[in-house]
Image (cartoon, rainbow, N blue to C red; front, side):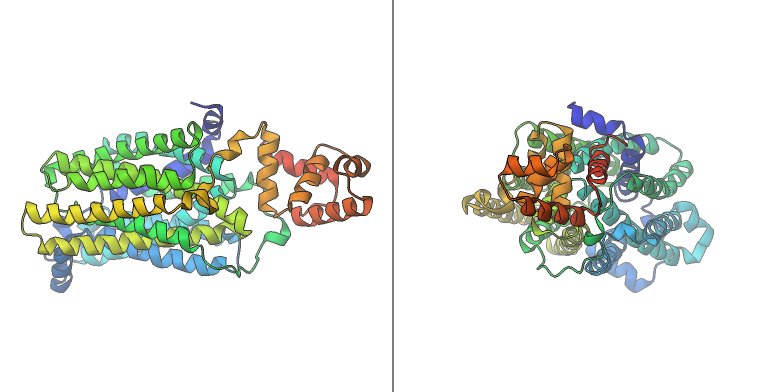
Length: 488
């Protein structure tokens, strides 16, 4: 384990908060704790709804919650055009915790038993609440981590996922009532840690707050996110018919695959220094395609296939999160705006892919039909990967950027200064002046070192102070110290 990753382990409240969010997702959507098909698909479900759900062969919780999630993220994206950072809206963490906890309680099995004939309505309301609440939670965490830069985003993601994997296994061993109550409390833990973490992260300068965004959406990133989301949704739709005795094994393998994907992305980014395009098209896409190859086979191979696909998808998901800080810095836009477009694209892709694939199952009569459907999906995935890598896109734009290039800086001072300079939109010359000021150099020294006029130095210093929202050299040094973690 590298020193940078080991350092994040010591930030226990911050890591546990993000880990609590991941644990909640896995317990709710990748375990049998909250899927009550027997209760819901009985007499308590309206006939029309039961027929519709049977036709698409998807869990009501997944479909309803995901749709609410997409709508919530779309609303937060619109809000981010004028109100940023979104974490400054003090009611959002409270609403996120309350909605997600109440929704989780509503979809628990004891709630359904107590409500008798109203089980369907309670379950539907709970699904909607979990979708709304979890949408707010993931946007807030993504915005906060993106403001820290790619390296720390990856570090936090990897450590949190490993902790979440252990927590998931522990919760799965508890009695169902205790397990469900524990999961209900996870959103409260997540948002409580988020509020604590937020206090230690330097706020953007005043000039960067509540900026009205006028940039065009990041179309290329959105297209990639939609494609991966559709692929994941298709796998979700196609694995719905897995025999009940294999569901537990499948879910356990998926958690192991997610943790493995997190470690793999850390290694390829940190050790091999791969760029975004190669991380996406050379590793993630082939892994996801390989998962579909196993689907037409019988257990255990189709179950292994879902785990392989999950490995590739989780790998890409962390790559996507590492990309957002780069896009925000290059476009000089709020991180919440970039995050909003990314999350909306991938979640919308999941929804569309789930519905499309599960609906297609209605026309698949045998293993041969499933094999042909899987082969078609594999062909499309590999065709896109070959086209993307052969088009030369890896040599231009952000695809050529290595997300861990920040780690090449020689000290925490340089890393923190680079993050701060990007966030405050300093020009290349202002960055040079900024680092000299942060080292305690005076105007005369800067004038001689950079061979520029004294009035030019004064102009750069004035601009730096304005962009970083400080009023003196000492305040600038203090700001950089907080950024580098000296006072954390």
